[in-house]
Image (tube, rainbow, N blue to C red; front, side, top):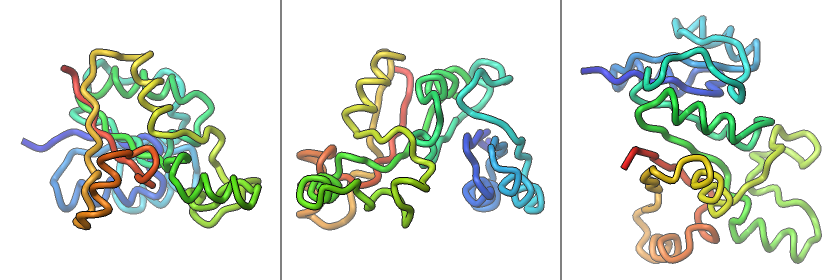
Length: 185
């Protein structure tokens, strides 16, 4: 049986296209950018233009997965986005750049400048990041919204034994880009 997936903040549809073509998923997306929607539609994807941090017009548990890939930090109301993801998806996959990553801390401490490591080549003034957050911040927010969920960091192993040990011992310090799977308990 093919999984149904809603990608919130789907960009140009790259992830949706991969899920459709490689995993045979039934995919949909929502994207704020008109150009992102246009590119997605050219790829034959069902992507709507709109905000993702407002109540969404989908039924409860309509999708097997609600995904938010590197967009949580870019919305005005991340708590609303998370609440909607929990409502419309049976499972949620969420990723974001971890602002508490050690390189970011060092840059702020020693250079006195906003860290660039998690800004993907942008400067602090022209990035879409409006809510910098850490892994700990994410756990606190999610536990306020839904404490009945199992949260698993699904990308904590990199194949490098030493690096994996550091990440496992303190992911908030050593995981640059966490990916979480959220499920009902």
